[in-house]
Structures are given as C-alpha cells and as structure tokens.
Length: 365
Image (cartoon, rainbow, N blue to C red; front, top):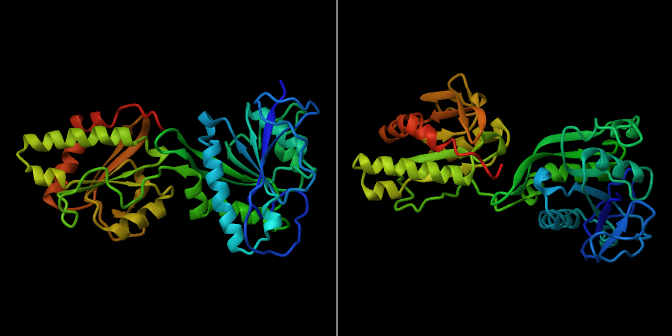
C-alpha cells in the first residue's frame, strides 16, 4: 500500500536535514496553496486531492507530523494552528516572507515502521523531514522496511527528543507525545530554533485546542474574592483526570455539602480550577503564584517535597497517595490549607464516596 503525504507550504524558518539557507530574515507572511504529493513514484492519490507535481522550490524547512490522530492527538486544524503561531514567531524574528512561503508540513500516517520508511525515503533530499511532531518513544528505535532505524539513518547526527508535550483537543482527544529534532542541533540552527519554538509556551499552546487556563473555573462563583473552597486539579494526561471526571466529582461533592446544611451561596462559590503545567516544578510554581488552593487532586507524590509544595512555602497539611483516578494509578490528593472547609473537603475527597467519583474511566486522555 502506498502512503500519501501532504506538503503544506507556508510557515517559515527552515529546518531541513540539509544545510540551512543563510538568506537574511525579514518580515510579512503569506500562504501558498496546499499541494498533495506521493513519496513513491506513483502519482495517484487516495484522498481525492489534486496530485500536482511536488514543488520545485527547496523548502526552507519540512515539519512532519503524525496524522494518526487517535494516537498523536494531532489533527489538520491543530497543525494549522501551530503553523500560524510558528509563522508569527518567524515574522517577529525577521524571517523573509519568501522563506516563510517555502516551509512545508508533511502529514504521515500508518504504523511506526511506515512512518520511519516515509522519513527515510526523503532523507538527504530537499524534502527531508527535520522536525517531527506527535511521535512516540519508539520513533527512533523502530526499524523501517530496510532494517534500519532512524538513528541508523542519521548516523553521526544525534536526534534531540522531548517527550512531555501535550497535543490534541481538550474537548476530544489529547495525548502526551514527542517532539523530535531529526537534525544536528548545533549545525542546523534553523531546525533547532523550530524545535525550541515547539517546546516554548507559545508552541505548546498552539498544539492544543480548548485548553483550560489556570485561572478558569468550571463553576459559577457568587463571591470570587471569597470562595467557600478552591479545588485544584492536574489537567494533564498522566493524572487520569478529565473535565468529565471532575464534573462528576464536583456534582458528588456539592450533593454531599447539601446534606451537611452548607448554604447554597457557599456551594455556588466553590472554585474548581484546572492546572495544565506538565512538570512538577512548573505546577508547584503555578500553585505558589495563586496561593489559594485548598485541595489538589491528581498529581504524584513528587509535587510535595519535605512537606512543602515543590518550590514554595505551601505546606501539605494532609496527603493521601497511591490512589487511582481515571484508570491512572499512584495519584494523590493533597490538603494545602488548614481552613475548616478545606479539611472537610479533603476528608470527603479521600472517602469511599469521593474516590468513587474519580474512578470514571477517562475518554479524553
């Protein structure tokens, strides 16, 4: 079976595995039409799109992405979002519009070995992929049909790989995937810049849709300056927690409070706040910055070091470890305030009733 790939010309800054174009950097951005081409000699297409010849202009950079969305979380819309953000980055850096116009995105589907084949088939050509989005830990170690891995193909070039990038739609499918630089990080500065952008705050934000922010709440607050209790949760794939599970938790907790004669106004003022930081140091910093979370759900034990939330002076008053949430084990619940309402919330959260609300299998992570 032949594989079809899509070159989206637009974006900029180049990072092909070949040498970088030294053309000076300028401004403004324009987009070129999408062109469909086949890696193999057969020029037919399975997608119904135009099978025009591959562009004759050497791409400034070729970015590959894993279009098996159920695995990578990536879709054409998300990649278009990333493209726009990357173009803005390049424009700000002074990259010329002519170079931006030649940047190409290549969608690659199939099993890992087929992805490896596609990348290897273009290695050493003008269409060589120098950055790949959405792969897994086996991208560099799986052999293609020629018996060689990408590491073998790269030879003396050491690939650079990051494995903690969330990709996808928080209202649908999102995954924690890899961003892989398939070029020399020292010699190919253009490729390295693209890799660095993908890992930057702006790059990461562009790889997800509908991401909640740390300051958002799923509840309507009557008195946002004085909520009855603030519950934080780790909205990250490793926590097992999802919006649906937290809605289940919220409903159960509020129903419990009603049985305890807690006023409606207090119940309505509860804040449920997601945190999307992927690393414990960044998560600790976000909690320290907000400094108002009473109970936190879903992180691992590493969030608290020597009784303090990492990088802060916030004391973990109580903690329960080894819990399962959304099918993910070794999760924790932390009480981060000595407030009476916080203590009552923590006690309910770690009870059988509270834990039960966190067991709904995740459908979005």
